[in-house]
Image (cartoon, rainbow, N blue to C red; front, side, top):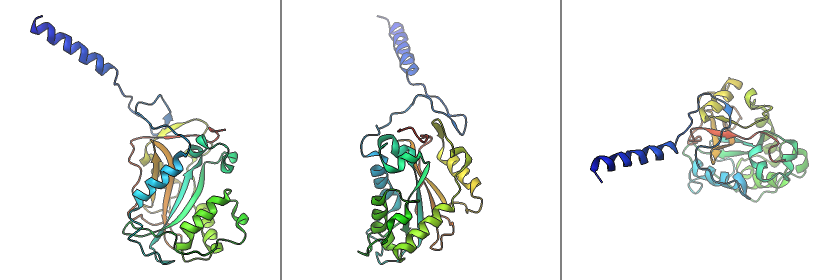
Amino acid sequence: MSRARISAMMLAMAAAAMGGCKTQPVTASAVAVQPAVYAEAPRGEGGYREERRGEQSKRRGNREAANHAPGSFDYYLLTLSWSPEFCVTHPDKQECAAHAAFVLHGLWPENNDGSYPDSCSNAPGPANPAQYSDIYPDQGLLQHEWEAHGTCSGLPPDGYFAAERSAVRSVKVPQQLQGLTQPIQLTPDQIMTDFAQANPEFPAGSLAVSCGNNRLTAVEVCLSKGLAPMACQGVRSCRANVVKVTPPGTGQ
């Protein structure tokens, strides 16, 4: 077989291979989800929350370097989880019955150097945890948040959960993420821009987006000890080019 014929055959094979690897560019800030053009890990039992906690630990820095004395920290990280993603694999959980969008995950003490304290004492939680069911329908999560993070706040239990309620109510959710009925795709920058526009009093750099497997899992807001929005220190945002946003009710 001649060299020319061999070369022609190789070019034809290369062209055929390229034809199976086409990608579709995202040309709008929010579009209906098309068939995935990248590999994704499955959302199995355990869901994104367990994965999210591990990812959060990597993003937040070194807990061992922190001073674990109650009240010894620099600022709070308010974490608002995107509930629909969790409810895809956990539809029987209490929070999923409400078909909520963002729900409170926690108000976490942080340090400017990237370290963070946790589990700072054995102080008991609130005497009547049910009074916080508006922000924590899952009482197990409330107890976990108190033990891991509330004990580091330097506040009494009722003071800590009152601060959480005040913090979560201070954040306005962008219109685009309210009443969502079908999956959409957004860039992390677009999500932060939308939140910044809905909350113009928030300073630049006070927001971060968290994602897992190219899906939105949370939005975070950095707050001072007095709960005023402030620029984040040592918190990295989602690095995906585009994230999928699952609509409420998908897991029902």
